[in-house]
Length: 326
Ligand code: AVJ
Image 1: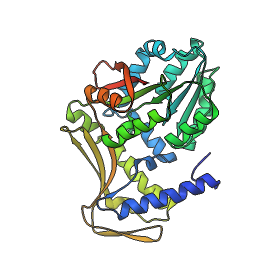
Image 2: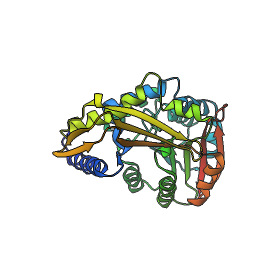
Image 3: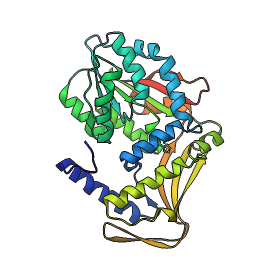
Image 4: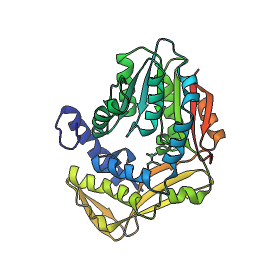
């Protein structure tokens, strides 16, 4: 499955959607884009590179949690004697969740793993690779957005659900949207179902700033790649040399934001429409919101969950929490 070359009905809908979203965002003031569109094949690869750069601590911290604490997770997660569905929203390469999956399989826990990802490329890779890494795994990948995919699983199976939302993916939403997201998620679940969710924590603001403003410039390439994608998919003519990345982090509220700004006055054509940029005008590309532990607990209670467990890395920079639907 490859969203760029396939011409199935779903791909057509996706193509229409990206066009509407991009034109809406570029006609707004300030201009913005949806960060979900970062992840085409090249974007997936650039994000894998981001996870390797020294400044991007999030992956290492969460990996440490999954390497060290799987048995603790397992005790809480294996509370369903007749098995469960383990649904990972935004599975990506599933490296972190693989630690947990291995642990569950080795302990003969009865479950089906449903990785859901917007990238068909990612789902294909998981189907090729995961059964080799974790023999015996019951795997059903779904290419979809989060709720679409979740509804699909609910229609296929009525077993209890455990949702994984790792990698601070929830950080891509501003707090009010994130809260609404958790509330909607809760509505898809039954009492007793579980959610294991990662939040990047507030910390030394320079550490956060540097994670999104790396020396090698991979984050800039990651942002610029969305313009390349738009050039290809929406017959646009962005000149990448005319845009630069800018990052901001506000330690008073935890809001990390990334932008591309126009280096000059210019006109760009996107899907037949002319978009004017003034010198230094910004496109708001992505939110990466940071929380305190207290805010995380508050989120659980406000969205219909009860916090069951907090797991943290040794630096206390990142947390994976387990919430129970009440
Ligand atoms: C995939 C949303 C967790 O916000 O940290 C990394 C994406 N963007 N560097 C994040 C990202 C720039 C990442 N998430």
